[in-house]
Image (cartoon, rainbow, N blue to C red; front, side, top):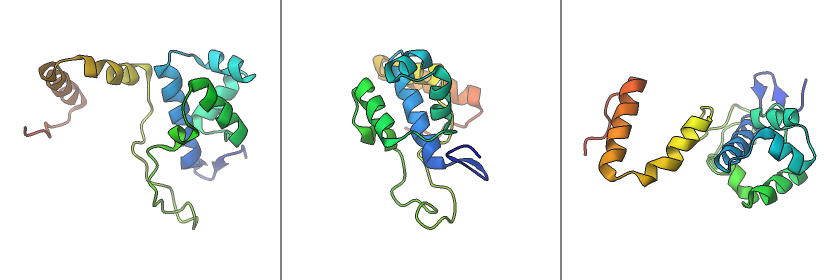
Amino acid sequence: MARGVGEDGPHPVDRHVGRRVCEKRISLGYNQSDLGRALGLTFQQIQKYEKGANRISASKLWDIARFFKVDVAYFFQGLNNEQPGVADGAGPSAFEHDFPSTRHTIEIARLAPQLSSRQQKLALDMIREMAGKADTDAA
């Protein structure tokens, strides 16, 4: 069994931290090879970190935070502080979201604030329609 992988796959915290590394890397315009070179690792190791398949050691997370110029706590943002199962082993933790970030979703989030309020609402309506979600914003 690989480190960080239990019966149901990677531990939720390892997946969350890996996802945050991936989101930050993409938002800063780095690829996995760039980050790997900066840390003395292969891009394959970065892939494993980002998927949560391999746990990131404290020292390596420190190095990643320094490379990205963020506080180490950045990688844990979005974790629910009262997580069932972390202390008692009862089950997975609650997270802010459980979907993969892509270059597209990160770019949409980065560009949206540059739009006027009206344009943001139009874009949101279009995305909701394409996703098959009903309009939940009555305002």
